[in-house]
Length: 395
Image (cartoon, rainbow, N blue to C red; front, top):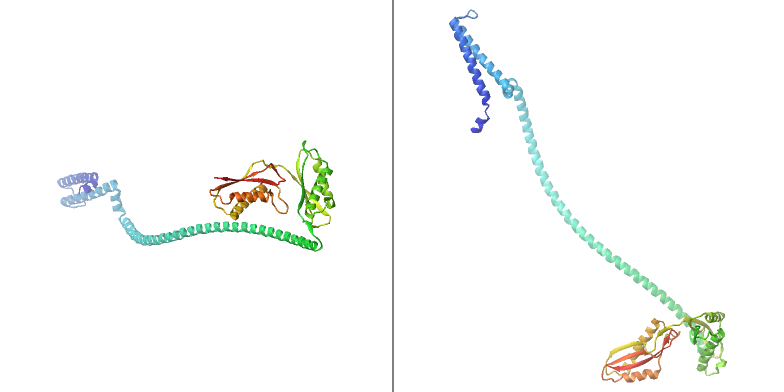
């Protein structure tokens, strides 16, 4: 109620009341004067004339009221002069409002459907994301498997390359064995006719040439004579003939190598006389010179092997195998360090059988653990041989 009173246009109401009072008062005054003067209008009686004045005053009050309302209020002016237009507008707006409400209902229905579609799409998206995540995990697994496969492929290719290299090496060995077989066949033919005293690839002489100040600057003839004399002596010891009867020849290329070595200065060189082919006793031995640079490999008494913890109570065979294994390791080490091996046997060591079996006897039947030490017996150079001494110590 208070809100309604507050919203009323009190100014307009007060103005209407005042205007109506003024017009009524004026009309009343006019009517009284007309009645007192007994004025007659249009030949009417004074009383009728007074009534007409009163009616005209009422009409004027209404007209003035409408004029004031129209002047002061847009709403009243619209209601008086544009009521039908406003009604038509209200009708149209009502129709539009109903249409809009219908559209709103349709929109709400479509919104609900769209929301349901959205929920369905969200569920589908969640399912797709789940499948995508599973696909990504599977892709990672496939990538890792592909990486492992590539690594395996690389390893397989490397193994294939190694196998191919081994195949080539085996083919080379087969070719070498075939050549060796041919040489052996030829050797057998020689054997049928006589005794082979030297074999192809065998070293029958070796000498060291030192062209430094302490070497004496040997001449090519001296070097060649030293090699040939050593070769004849070696062959003569095998055949029990006079060394002067053994004939050894080398080619021009080997003689040129000897001259080059003799002309050099400040070098220690190894010259080896290698047999070119199997030779039967009584035939001329053909050979060629191989040259190597010589250097000191081991000093005198240098430790070459040291194996401790040899168990007690070894038998002769076990002690022999243990010593043989240690000496074999020494041989491998010497080859690795640069000592030239025997061309046929591949050995570099030089240990007498008596020294070897003396060491076996010392090692056999020990009651306490033993220690085996192998040392260089003397300074050892590239040309070898590796002369060693064996010490058996108790731990």
